[in-house]
Every structure is written in C-alpha cells, then in structure tokens.
Length: 208
Image (cartoon, rainbow, N blue to C red; front, side, top):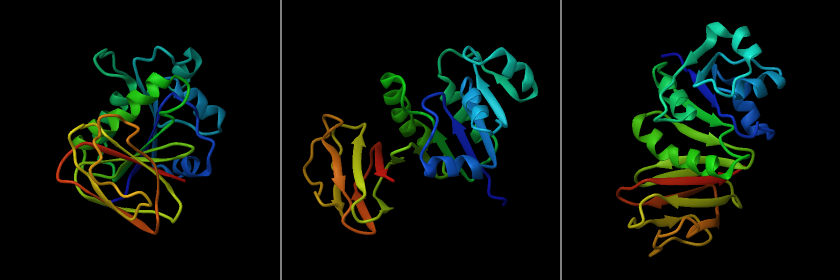
C-alpha cells in the first residue's frame, strides 16, 4: 500500500521550527482548517483541501481554491475535528496535526485534549507537532524513542490511572493524576523510556 502522509494545518500559530516545517514539506496532502490556508499560502505552499465552516477564510482564497473547499456547517464540532474526520476517509498511513497551539490558550488546551479522542478513532500513527515538541496519545503501556536530556511531560485525562515509568530521571510511581501538572517537566535518561499502565487516556509530550 502506498504510504500517504497527511498534515492537518490548524489556524493557530504557523510553524517556524524545522521539525514541523519538514512535516509540511514532505506531506502528500495538506488539509487546512479554514483560515489556516492564508498562512500556508504566505509560506509559499498551497493547500490540497480547505475544510471547515469557512467563517475565517478570506473570500479571495475561497474563490481561488473553490474546487478544494469543503464546507461543513456542523456546529457540534470544531474545524480541527472536521479536518481529522475527513482525513481518515482518505486512508492515510499517518496524520500529523500542525498549527494547533498558540494564539488563544483555550483553543490550545482544547486541541491538545482532542488528541485522546482522535487516537481512539484511528489505528495509524497520530501526532500533534509544535515548534517545541510532539504530543502523542496512548492508551496502554508504550515504549517511546528519545534522546538523553529530552524534556518529557505526561498528561492523563483519567484521574484514577496508575502509571509506572522506566527511563525517566524522575520515575513515575504512585502519582495521583488529579491535576495536569503532576507528571510534567521530566527528563529522558537515555534513548528510550517506557510508560506502563493497563488502560487510560494519556498524552505524552517529547521536546525537539
């Protein structure tokens, strides 16, 4: 099967770090959430598709790319969710979400939390890539590649989860995840680390 890498570009801060920019350049398809198309064009690239309720899309861009625009008026979900669900219909080999952080903090928190829902709907690699690192959703014990000194933060959307770690400077054991800061600001001690837990919704951040 042909490998198909899809990048979803949300309408947050446009990437400036080489890691997310490289993901943009090598993508087989770039799907823009509404107004993100304008930022992409300013960077010298074109969207393959533009999706959303189109409330923040420039009329000139809408007319120029009218054959690539998909209007979804459903107000029960946001543009990122609409773009993700459409991306799944294209049978991708992996999906990277860019531009989902920055600008408004409430959008940033909401977008990061959506990863745990998105990951449940797909069996392919899914990441949110920012200028500072990569967020990955996991649901059971997982081994992560790392470099010694990488900054690691673990967020659980389930407050009763019990996680044990191996390969982190500050081992996790007996941490009660009743607040999102509880397992942040850790450090990888080698080329990999392990999180062990039976079941739950966990999002892991690894710095570039």
